[in-house]
Amino acid sequence: MQPIPKSKDSKHINEFRPISLTSLLRRCFESRLLRYLKVSESTKHIFEFNKGQGGFRSGYSTLSQVLLAEEGTNLGLDIKVFLDLQQAYDRVPHKRLFRALKAIKMPYTIAKLLYSLFVGCIIHVTVNKQLTRYIKIDRGLFQGSLLSPLLFNIFIDSLAKIINTRNLVIPNMLLFADDILLQASTYTEIKNILKIVGNWLMANEMNVNHQKSGFMDTRNTSPETLSIQNLPIPSVKYYKYLGFTFHKARIEFEKSSNERVENATKLLYKLKSFENQWNIYAKLIIYKTYIAPAAEYGLGITYHWINANYRNRHQVYEPLETLLYESIKWITGLRKHKRVIISILGLCDSQQRSLEHAYRLTIQLRNSDKNNPISNFQSMSNSVLNSNRLAARCFRNTIFNPDKKLSYKEMRAVYLENLNSEMILPACILNRSRALFDPVINFKDDTTRRAAILWRNNLLYHKRECPVCFKPFHRTHINECNIFDLKNERLPYWDSMPASYNYLDHLLNSGKELEFKRLIFSLTRYLVPRPNKQIEDSTSRSSSTS
Image (tube, rainbow, N blue to C red; front, side, top):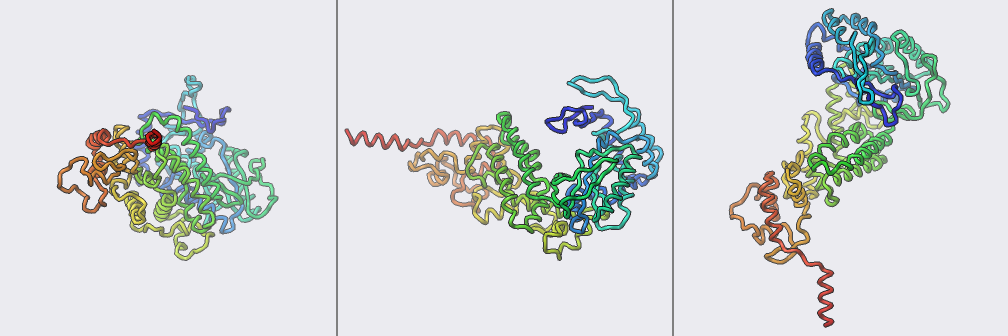
């Protein structure tokens, strides 16, 4: 077991997350067992949880749970209590867990198999890079086991069924694994719910982390006191739930988005210290894998919120654009022609990116599980015009038709066509060469790759003269002055390209690195450096004086 700090200031053992590094054979076995449980007729039913549980379930997501929390406020459930369970996975009592398995009629052989996998295990703990002696565990689920999320959902599902007894549009209790949100319209109702939750936690040997819990409402400036397990729950002004900041029982979209961008920017600055170790392609993959997801989480919901609140558009998109431009400078080292570089890298601006996220969110919500409460809002999507029905807005069509289910590459092709129609991108780059990213990004040689990107941006050899006409060099001179002495036959794509399209552009669009490298080095020797203008002026003055 490897303790992972939850923050950079973690010192006490309670501030570490115990991640279990189980054997490879066990992980392979758990993967096969989990697949069997999903398809077997005798075990399919164990995946049918209460509709308030959204964690680790097909047809549910964090975004659908966040939308339900927002819509709960619109429907009058404006008293919200956020509960954090103390070491939830590590405190699951085995006896209670297997009692829950028996209650849902888990086959005896499967229950015995699970018993052998989780009960009576011994572990090592890594402390200061040293392994401790063997420790026998008598409770808890391994964080890192493929079966742990399923077993925890089974364990806590009985609590959700007790609370969510009424057939409401939005349940009083929303869960995402161990993240619990309780919501009610009156303090009397929320106190009754807290009492039931407290009794269940005591019976199942679980505790609430009061320091990380909180409650808020939209009405009272001095709310009543709420408590659970004989301790008060703090009244909070802001609370982060599933990556979104809530204030007065509503999502603070601008604050949530800016916080995510700030965290992504900090990560970018940390990565800049290692920039000499990676080429452009590696940096691009790092950006797409770590930086962009950290900044763009929930961007689909934010897009629909912006469309209902146009005054906040600039406050959300400007930080995203700044992060994007800082990232492309880190990736390529170039500062000019940002839109062209973004296209070469297979990226797009923040507004287009939010549109893509909104499209994917619409597809995801339309494919939600039939029991997911979020599906209740699909019927409202064609009639709701105000921002008070955000979930319904998220079911709406964007510029992309959700019924067509476009792929990422097809969405990017539409974006590139729009840019081309506005004459923002150079016509010498084929759309197919930048639908995901330009082939030049994959060039192995660093010098050749940088020269190719500079050529794409018309920044290569701008300080040199053409040796034929002695004018400042431009890409058109390759054809007009016949620098490479090419044959007369036409190359592919030339008929549909502008007059400036030349053999070097053809090589880049085709991804032919070695041929481009050979010609670019010969061109370097062939072109004449432009004389310094200041030197020319001083020379002419001295000659006139003499």
